[in-house]
Amino acid sequence: MSAPHRLLLVNGPNLNLLGTREPDVYGTATLADVERLATASATDAGYEIRAVQSNHEGVLIDAIHAAREDCVGIVINPGGLTHTSVALRDALTGVGMPFAEVHVSDVYAREAFRHFSYLDDVAAVRVVGKGVEGYAQAVRELIALLSRG
Image (cartoon, rainbow, N blue to C red):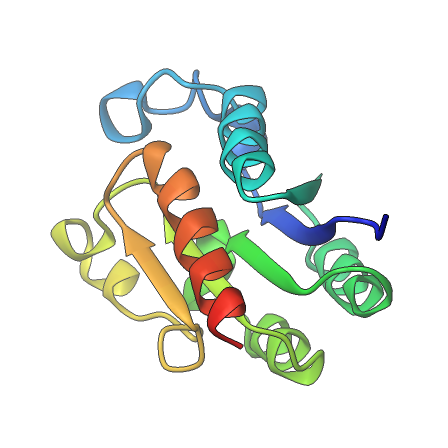
């Protein structure tokens, strides 16, 4: 029996504060809830999730690079790095695997600087403003894309 396929789940800066940070914007679900939700969606399709969260850009980039060894796709909520990090974009495009960009809040209904994403034109899947349920949707859509080959 072959090992299941694996997705890397990446959560960027401040997402460790989910559940307590601005609950009117981000809701009350925690990062642990997000990881359980993504894992359940992946498991239903025969995939595994490896999760990483960091407030440090280099740690996220290193995790993305390491994903080449045992992952077939990435689900990422880059947090504030969405709007600032060319290096994160370069890491995601450099590993050569499809990725899904997720945002809990509707970034287009917020401050103007949040409307720009360095990832939106290279992401295979984008899910914006669906709350933490957006992670499950992103996992399902990315797995569907991977299944089509």
